[in-house]
Image (cartoon, rainbow, N blue to C red):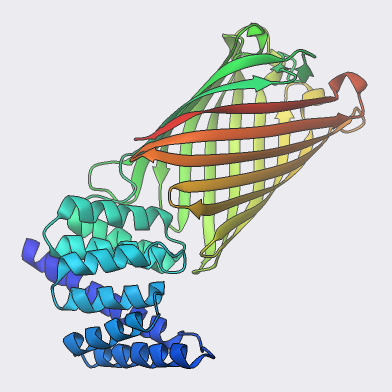
Length: 421
């Protein structure tokens, strides 16, 4: 069985690296200078020899191109392919790692390092490279291929045992307090706070579809205890073209009661290619009060919307829209809402990721009032060691309301550490 899995993986790898090789060779840019033309001719000759499976000869041409000034990532990548096919794994690994320094060839190069490690018998290191590619690659096809390779290597799904824990210290310019009436009020005071976050997702046994998730957030202020918040959620997942989550959550304010809910979320992916993905979203929540204060919060909440994602080698973006309806015990707490969000993610360098987010929500309380909430945020994460990251974040919230006492602005600056579990 292990031999069969190894044969399947090698066959899939061979097809993929040869296709990638042809792509890299076809897209070699034209150069004007005579020396560059000579280097390109040597490179093209090496590519043609790989097509004919004459790998030793191809390396001579690749090395000649390098000597003539071609130090590009595409040259290193193709040298890695030739070394790999000659079973010269140490040299193949080094060549692919050099090619991974370029964002254009990073994803495929790291995947190929996984192939090298697997062929060399280093299954743990191969699994690490496949897992990284399955989680981080911009190409949907490459992510799927890496996920299959990971399953063959470890027998475990790429989504198994994924989680994180964060501990942050921050300062808020104007602490916003959720009160039992369901309205957020500005305290008009600043304060420092601690924030902890926990997230975890796993599958059941060897299942590729069924799993569970849990998440939690706790914010504790140094002085304004009325602003303390605790939130936790636990749920079951079904993962597929139509993904379903069923969960229960609890939200506490000032270490006292607030609300709990039973939540159903459905996401239907209707289009998913290398550069774009589009999905419809919908959800329903049944809300109950915790404690005696916020009985008026009880009722339900539902939403419909969609998300469009665009991906490239340097940046990924997600644009979302939701139409939200609220039906609480008190009509004054049941606004009709429209929410538009934009999330950007980019890899700046090795182990450095930047995220930006923006959200606009308008809330119409029939003839009572109208609110407009603007939220902006940014995060910079720097990998310090393996699964340990330094995290810096900033956020700004502004609520524009027709009721003067409900208008507020607040800014948060915080930083700390995140551990990938």
